[in-house]
Image (cartoon, rainbow, N blue to C red; front, side):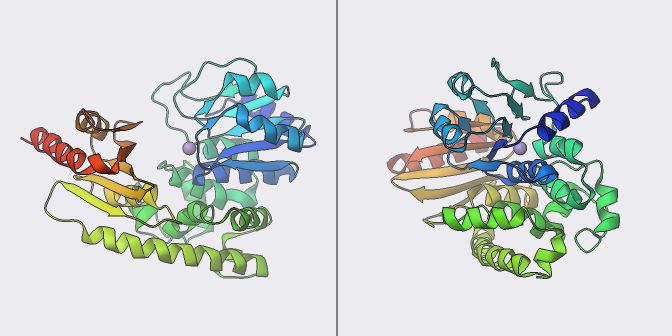
Length: 345
Ligand SMILES: [Mn+2]
């Protein structure tokens, strides 16, 4: 968490910004972090990173184009020194991935002090915001990053239709109506750029989740329709993925959908529903298999299975990603199953 002093400092920096530029990660934690901070003063612009998690010098074009007086970087794991040197503006970076060593930036990361801390960026953005109307955005952001927020009782009291009672993360995120609200912040960022941009613009003005989910305004109706369409596509693939579950320790679901990627969401939902298994969700695209992998120490399993394979991967101990050349896929998968097999012996 941010200290009281840091909260006061960041509030002041936001208040005195006239045209802040927010770079944020294109997932639910990133988007909710942006919304929470943007909605305090409704000034400036937001730019999401969708295809990379590295804010490098190629993004200096955006800085020149939008000419901000300050830059806020939210939930982005990597920022290049060249970007920071070239930006030439006061820059504030709030994140919770492994700490980086950079100069010329006000860097806020709870893992600098406590390497085991797990505080989503949106939880810190909520410390800065505390704008009562936005409690639902903050709750969805934390839960989307697999963190039960300490203000959940307050949320339940205010929005029992989304969460009738306190429970564990799996039940809250995947087996309660809250699940839809969390998925909303992921799925609204998928699809054609122009539609995503419009959706986020509309979202900066929404006053309650009921405005969306009960279609209480034209803006809410627009967002709900768009979410429902994407969510239906997700439900279709989820159903197919669940059918791939057998007695085997490894769940593999490979799909080819070109336009819509649900890989990360599918992997997270399946491992929550089948916590003792290993999950591989693979999307076939341009001669490669892009995978999300989940399971106990799956990173170590992945590293062994990758030996001699054209492919690469990395991430956290229990959740990682990999890209494998299509022609090596069968060998890779055989390796993977063998490593899992030796683990359970
Ligand atoms: Mn995050």
